Image (cartoon, helix red, strand yellow):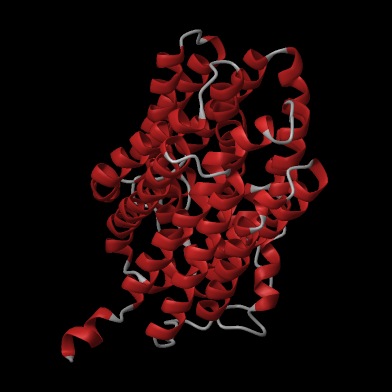
Length: 396
């Protein structure tokens, strides 16, 4: 019996949530470009609109603080998982533009609320010294789930001929079963600090907000256009895209926890500096790549660099008032998605004229992020949020 009790911990709950989310969402993501091109005849314009619509719930993530007046965060996380799984399950039934926009909003609402709450609970439940390593473990768990999802796509669709509709339904239905198991198995855990039930914006968090904004802008180019390029320019099939994802998440599974531990040792400033220098090179490479194999290599390296985004979250944990975390998680997701609402649509139009310009825009965003990362102090904490404040403290 003690073994069973020890298993039902907040950390294991977070790891199970981290498992089921990509198990379902990865199917939606991996199939999307092939599905919309092959079944719905999308061009860059339509995929840009869909991706902009997908980010609207992320932009509205600040509203999670109002739902906390009704639900505790743990309950809300399970409900968000249910909504996401339902959205994925019905995606394949209507391969037309408007129905796809609607099912995408349903899926995205669950996904973004879950991500917001999950980040909040992680920063509340974990000790600051252990957070970076734990987030690395989360990356590894997500990678295992994603590997199962992509492997299933390759086996069922590429080898056995399962159709898009059945694959989406299978992924969403399996996710719902796992959510039910989580709901039944785990007790309701207490939160260490009572959270503010209002929107919190603090001037001293400005650097975190800025890093979050450019991260969201930059990530949209990767999520929307890097994968789209693989299918449109280089003709990757569903099976080939799935194998590429398998490689990505296989690397994350092997190195996720190590990346988290490394960030904990070297600090956020150095980790983010290395990430953004790497992304400058990757996006510039996307702009001019002409070989499918090199494009795939850039995609894998890009995905690995994004794992270092853990450092932005641990930076915030170190500078934040513990009572601000839930509200600030929602606000940060909204800031992360300000650019995401309009960038896919605008750059979708640019894509029709110059894909190179789209990726060079990503290079510009990475340069801005690098400049901001150099303002992070070597030992961030409350009252020492930026390098300027660190110098003021030392001089005084």
